[in-house]
Image 1 (cartoon, rainbow, N blue to C red):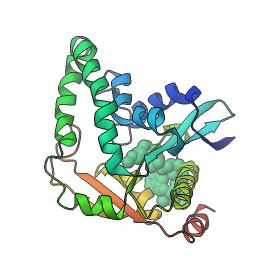
Image 2 (cartoon, rainbow, N blue to C red):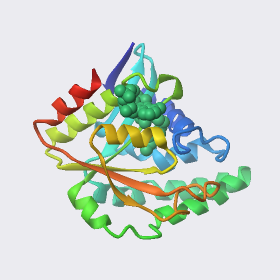
Image 3 (cartoon, rainbow, N blue to C red):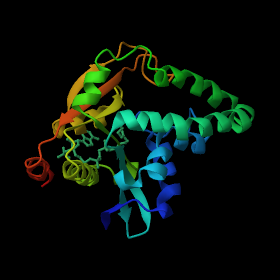
Length: 231
Ligand SMILES: CC(C)(COP(=O)(O)OP(=O)(O)OC[C@H]1O[C@@H](n2cnc3c(N)ncnc32)[C@H](O)[C@@H]1OP(=O)(O)O)[C@@H](O)C(=O)NCCC(=O)NCCS
């Protein structure tokens, strides 16, 4: 049985594993990225280590985490905290370990730099952060997908945002991630930004576009909207 629980440190390794196994536009990153811990630093460890109260986990039989939704209520603050708390760890890992053990992964991360330095700039980024201040990441292991777990995690997270009076939430994905796109449309997200071709995250997928989706939240009707679509 799968239940949704608040994050606990016992799930930290599972979270890195899920992130790595789903992080290549919805698929395993292992073909293109050889350092799972660095991948965790880049994409999930900030949330579980520094904002665990905004992280919810799908757990099977009270033991193994099989999916998660992680996020921040205030993306501007999160951006600054990420730079201060995680970036130094990323740089240390890159130069003391990855560059020697996995040179191709080091090169891949240099390409990610394009993303972290926001090139090309998202023209409406400030508006997005104002109107949709929270953001999220949701990932579920392959075997557990399409069973309603993503829907439950999203409902939990949106409730959490509503309890904190957050007006909107956004997220980034790739034009190649068709199932995620279907998922977000189903739950009322709209496309806010689409990069030109070639500005997806991965160097080996030159035609992918980066997409940003957003959703305005209404205190009272969010639950009803998701509930009516779950069953
Ligand atoms: C996207 C994701 C979170 C959806 O979670 P899920 O538990 O599989 O989704 P649910 O079972 O709750 O499905 C809800 C709806 O999403 C859409 N959806 C989910 N998987 C889909 C798929 N493979 N193809 C098409 N639509 C899909 C459908 O509209 C579905 O409703 P339906 O089953 O009534 O048709 C999950 O597929 C996943 O983790 N993918 C890998 C990682 C990833 O891509 N994360 C997002 C990164 S931005």
